[in-house]
Amino acid sequence: MMAQVEGMPLPALEAGIDWNWETFADYLNRLEGNLGVNAGFLVGHCAIRRYVMGDEAVGREATDDELEAITAELGAALDAGGMGFSFTLSTSHSDGDGQPVASRWASTAELTALCVETGKHPGTTLEGIVPGCLDRFDDDEIELLAQLSAAADRPMNWNVLTVDSKVPDRIGRQLAASDRAAELGGRVVALTMPVQVPMNMSLLHFCGLWLIPGWRDVLDCPVDERIARLRDPEVRASLAELATSPDAGVLLRLADWGSYRIGDTFSDANAGLKGQIVSDVAAERGTSDFDTLLDIVTADALRTVLWPNPPDDDDESWRMRAELWDDPRAMIGGSDAGAHLDRMCGAPYPTTWLRDCLHGRKLTSVEMPCVS
Image (cartoon, rainbow, N blue to C red):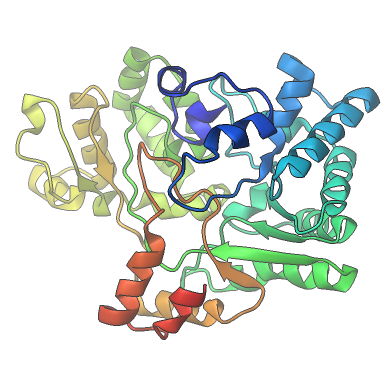
């Protein structure tokens, strides 16, 4: 499950982790006395669903007996010290086999039962991700998040509200989930980041580009076939069209091909390109930005490291972010701040934000990062 969702390949997990624990309580006991910082953990739906259902956790809904066992396992984990319950329904979350992760196969009844169980344990919280977190919630998603929070009588946070002045209506739409939860007696809170987190990409491995509708059909091919297809003019035209279609949603931000900065390269054909901007190389070659990017990548057998430049670094986007920071329906953070270490690291955002308040944009007081 972690291979694609969090950029943690199975061989690394097998080699780097001592797997002599089984339950959530066992896991916490392994950490006791071995950490230099305070740490707390939510109980993941995928893990307990897989623990109870085995391989069949991927592929179908739980039976009544299985749901009872999953609920009991959640309760035991919360009693052991779990801080709450987290789940995902996001279409961006697939396992190493390309299948939806276990949580995505759950019924609404299963999610509700687990949220209700969470509410029986004092001081707990909820976290959920649905497809609309990437761009805009649909009505059903707003209702689901609100209903789950109200059923548990616990706050629900979701990850992550992206602020972009080119899409000004997104904030209001996403915060509608908070308003609906309040009507039902619950509380839904959007997580939002106060910094830009650099993120690299490689067409050799899973990355955000796979999430563009239609792109997985090409990028999930064996490497030799993938290279051949990425050199095909018709395939390129199709990918370019898909990346700029309305269906791409928030992933449209990845389609500014000319703004990508070229990182490490590996072929003689790409010698000297490291650090250059794709649009500059395209101008020299007389080719389109997208063709140039794919020419570079395929010459490197897909190993090229690419750095997209964020398209929402304008003054108005930052003004909108500062306004959002004061809204009680949102809070600063990103739910998996240390994950995706193959391509990004958001964990230092508190100190990065503090530095920005002191020496950068100074959009808010120094006190806000300290209390957030």
